[in-house]
Length: 103
Length: 140
Image (cartoon, rainbow over all chains, first blue to last red; front, side):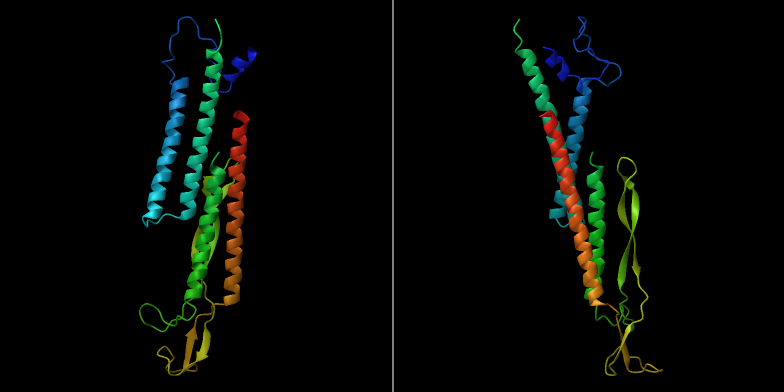
């Protein structure tokens, strides 16, 4: 059972306790809540993909884009997306583990 | 995480500019007059690189950028062609035409070097890509 608590270590900020206090008050101050961290990273990945899309469009419609730069933008977006997906998979896995606890 | 990719890409762009300059030199190998129609041979171009601090990896490793495209001032190749419209009319070189001093051997060796440098940087991008994908296996 100690295994499950370890999952959240790299993801949640050190200040947030692993088990929520009974008050269940969501973190409103600070703005560094887990939710905003997640949304921020998704938005970053999305903006990378939008950049890659623009670059590809510019390349294929005869713009002045350099092929090397365009392909790097695509590769960056791909790697960022894969990283995000891995984090998401890990979160879902942790959630499943907690869900399967019998009470 | 992606600054390594940016550094390698800056090198790709720079080497490509170099290949463009070489292409221009070879294309103009027999150009004997300028846009204004005056008899002036094409002077070979060469590209000067400099470290680009606007692209920086962790620890301050810079990328590369084209500082300038310089025009070399080599002496032209003189050929005796009195019937040529760009031939010199009077003076000690009367009847001679100034041809660009583009050395094919040098240009092709430079092109080969630029191509190899390009390939090397694509190789570095491949390594960076693999590293990132390998790191993802830690969490998977």
